[in-house]
Amino acid sequence: MGAIGAWRPFRELERMARRWESFPRFFEDFEDNYDEAFTPAIESYVEKGNLVVRADAPGLELKDIELTILGNVLSIKGERKNEHEVRKQDYLHREVSYGAFERRMSLPQGTATDKVKATFKNGVLEITLPLAQETVPKRVAIEAGPEKKVEISKK
Image 1 (tube, one colour):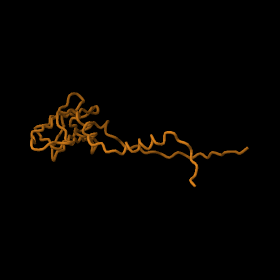
Image 2 (cartoon, rainbow, N blue to C red):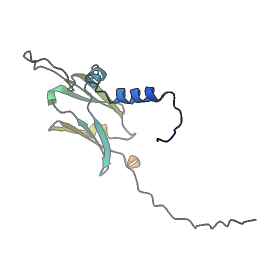
Image 3 (spheres, helix red, strand yellow):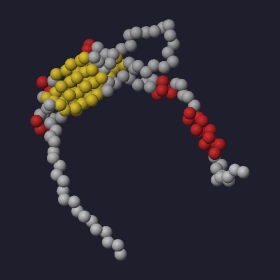
Image 4 (tube, rainbow, N blue to C red):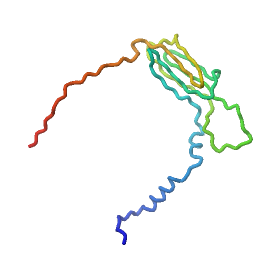
């Protein structure tokens, strides 16, 4: 004889919800990404007193990218164009985005914007800007303080 369990009036609904969650959703990603435009991923770091900004722009050519600095704002503009059109096949799903983009980044005060260097190689735009000495991170030593013992009295 089976064990008696707790009565759960919504057990069948829970079971149906679990089945529905596992049901494949063929066009969900396509619908979610339909309006997304291409935006290059950016990373920035400090190396040898320089601010280095790298933007991943696969599929773009140098002529498709514009780099400007206005005040302390670095702007990267560009456009990925879809010039290749396939009429023989019907697409069910496409994850490659096309369109114009613009990324902006505030530069630290004292950045030597007149000495900027930029290179574009293998779909990666790399921008190097000399930083002012005041803005270069310095390692700070951390001192260990004396440990305090806490006694707990039992009453």
